[in-house]
Image 1 (cartoon, rainbow, N blue to C red):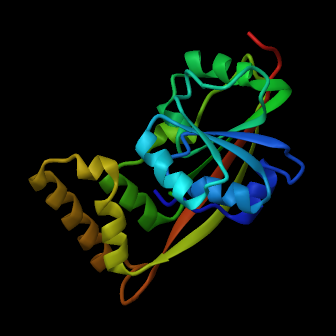
Image 2 (cartoon, rainbow, N blue to C red):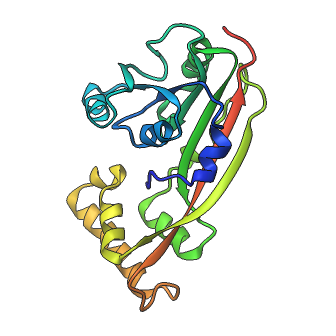
Length: 223
């Protein structure tokens, strides 16, 4: 899954007035870089100490903590916004939502952002059928202790040569974990799609369509 986000998506999700952000599932800092470039004060949390080491190499000014979404190692009321990019689908909502509310100041927000292929485009839908679609990312449920969620989507495309698209597919975690023969069969189907779909014939580059989906909800109470 591509980790890039349109600037307008971040404008919607995190206005420049946001004072302090806690990022969950920060990983090596792909989203963190974008947040820091906007002048935001970011505290990064991730279960992997190794990934946070990589983050600090690139962003030494960012405070990091090893921890998970269900057990955030920060005091109560320490964040104006808790943000998660491409990681909320790993959370256990029953445990994570009260913990996020605990970390937020009264009236703080949970902000989620993730990318998904735009399956309204026929060849992208067919690609999704071959390699699998992360449906759990597309419809996160919040509810109490948060108010009604605001949602927004932003469309964009990622130009890729055929070999780059194959590389992107090969690196997906669900493809990496397949037995070698099954992985080879999936990649053969992708190559067949690229070679035969009418929208892709004779093209040296393919515009892989994405939608960036954003969700923002305000905390109502602390548990």
